[in-house]
Length: 141
Image (tube, rainbow, N blue to C red):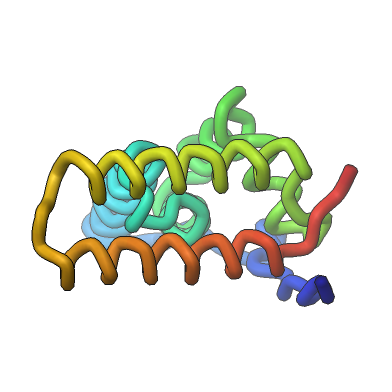
């Protein structure tokens, strides 16, 4: 399958922290909310984790350099975020784990959480779309 080149998201050296305290606080709140949604996305397969983690990084970069540094140095998110932002892609292991959890949770939901055929079809469609997206990401070995 053809890999789609990723756009470089953020050059941290060119972004300035907001000067206004209230604006910095808003950026920090937005980053924290985005990160929270991203963490929930680890468990819920229909919520993507990566975009919310990237949004959190961008918000923290504008609100607090310290919080940005803590996020990109975090042992769980840090390497993944740095690799993605620098265009190196995601590891094959991360892709396999993501797809495995995605399908496990979708199939559990289809079998045990709903008997509505339309909802089941939507869940399967979401799983297929997310799988295609994950397989199209640039990977590294």
